[in-house]
Length: 400
Image (cartoon, rainbow, N blue to C red):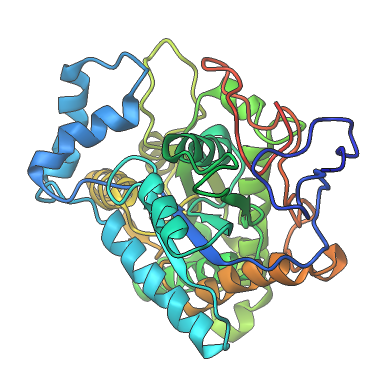
């Protein structure tokens, strides 16, 4: 018999016994069989682009003309999104790090919107006799699209495959690692990147006070942002807290690096808006902010893709193409900081997050760089509601 959760909610759906009670942090060891690397997915050829975009926007009534507008971003890169290749690299890097540490945990990979799908990864897990999976979603922050929607898709995949209920195929249980926005492994690559970006600006003879750091992340509807996290507004708060950590780390080492980061101002900006003009989304837009800074006399911008783990389409198009063009148009020097990708600190940090759950590491011993962390292992009731769609069944969290 499964125990009731501390809050009185029903047991966590599809969870291992250790996580089913809904404790904020699970400090009980779990013998996981495999890691489930879960990502957004992307097209891998021109013929894939429109079907992929239909998958992404299903149920939202987006007209074909709008899909064609977005499609040209992908068509400019031959119809191939970089994201699947980057996930193959990340999967291989995780496997190598696990092997280096002597950890016998296979890595399965499944996407939400394109092949290989999550359902295929679960079928593979079942065929290999795996019943306890620990998911790593390739998004670091708390919001509907970066956390809850992943959890909904885990539930959908279990239902589609028939592997979520006891029966002849057995039952697969899925837990998830905590949102890792302030884990040192995720943050360190950005610290290194900002230091180098400021050096690059200085090498052009641009003083730190004439340089502006723009931390960029995906814009989301303000209604979703207000409901992100269990108490609301977690999405912005997490980004702002991490950006402050990065700038503080840069400033603390300015004598070593030769760049005085204490003189460099910074902002959180947003990109990749896709909603109608009538719907409020988080602002300011990165391009609009660059234009404003140019008018204020700023000579250089260091663009930090703080909301992203790899150089996928939103980074390659919205930052490397559009934002860089905006800076050039205004006569500004601009440099874009690398995403974590397969940086050794990031890959090692993801493995550390897995070990937190496998070994039941006490909460007090879990590394985090902001006062917001360590974030929850099991998402709280009502966390990251989508106002338009309402609550759907979601794994790795308490209902609703």
